[in-house]
Image (cartoon, rainbow, N blue to C red; front, side):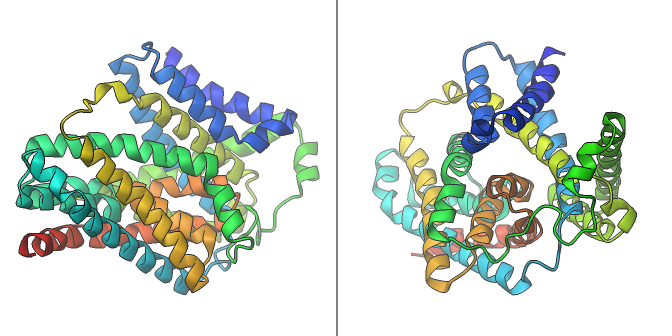
Length: 383
């Protein structure tokens, strides 16, 4: 039970400390939580049972954060046209770096004993991951008959690179986007467009009433998650994660227009708390010592080239095409890490208007990821 106390108490303490000492907010509570999580996870005190519990907690926390953060959104503040552009730019960028990386690292693969077809299978699996998320990895890998040893290497190295990618987003992502794109067209405050009490009114209310409001928000979110999960069990689609996220998003959007629910206070802050719990749990699970860096180290560099190269291309194209920077970053993490990570970017950017289009972009990626993965395999083996 100590691990549960650690996962839920530390983020709360960091949030409370950030309100008392502004320097913590400037550093970013996420940065602090990642440092704590990585330290705890790599000093040898976290066993396999605790890591499994971290996985379960991270799954629940990120699902609860989605409806809590969406309830306060103003859905008139974003453009569907902008989301489609960001999606297409993201797909194009990922395909360019994946295909380019295939040729860049091809000789190293041959020298390591991986033939052309198997390396094309690696590229196909990576395309599936970075356009549709981890849920598309196994189907693509199975469809192209990726050898088991390469399956384990790609999945293991992906964990390392995407963890570093998340750290990059938390530490530098917001600053980089604000530098490249000084004004975001989707920026909105968490409660914009909602008829909510002012901060002064909220803070003047008794503690028990504020606590009851937060509990009500969590209760509504839990009901939305439970209903979405239950419905996903009866929908005959293999990719249950995509179904759950789609249902969560749909129900949250619909309920966000229900005025009594919109008056539940501080739903965004409560959702942000669960994002922090998620970040701490994910950081605690990362253990680079479990991977063997030797013969196939070039696959790690290939994955890093694909992940960070796609982000660089997306930002470049967004700058050239005058797309929104916040939405571009949300699209990148939604495609690379999957839609449930979008609230984390919204928290980093302090812009929850990117949650809905960011999730939508990831869901589109889920829809096309398998096709693109298999298509890349066919293309690369034919060359």
